[in-house]
Length: 210
Image 1 (cartoon, one colour):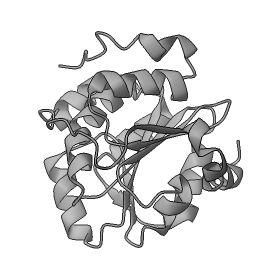
Image 2 (image 1 turned 135 degrees about the vertical axis):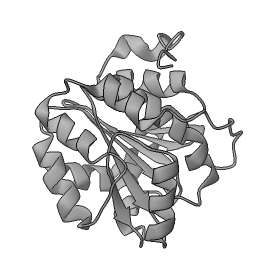
Image 3 (image 1 turned 60 degrees about the vertical axis):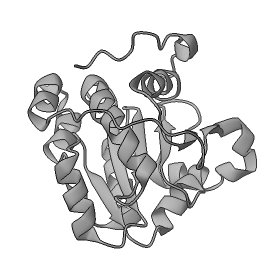
Image 4 (image 1 turned 90 degrees about the vertical axis):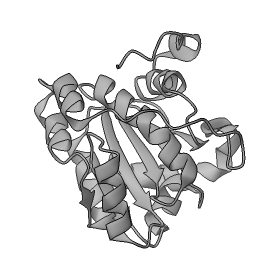
């Protein structure tokens, strides 16, 4: 799917919000405690041997990229043939902080076959965002979106966190709100990014990354 068409589809998802938006963890719902951080060295070890296009993402892990929509479209074009997961977050967002440990682990476990990306949306301070990323290292880059416009276009939501799952085939899926556990995030990666319809009930025991 062409990046321009992908963004257009995502921008219009509000029309079918009840179909494509996960509503189980909307803002204001119960939040889980933050997971212990998974160190950058451990993430690199788990991702060793990744395909070149995904290894290029891992080399930019924890970085904050500029360039906006044009840059994101170019990266999505380079990732053609791979499922993509985009997590919209902000350094001031408490539920974003709480779920970052889950994204650390799941991106490290599935990053050899799934492209993970971040979107730092509505964060007015680049310094605050970089400080947060240093304290919570992830194996993928984020795009800096201080106005929140790209995040709004991508997710049709001004809230954070929001996660977009883009399979190689089929429609994207948007989950609004915090992921309460590694198991829940793994289940959605399998079901909506990897298009594994049997994964809806296969999340037990999914927290495998130490």
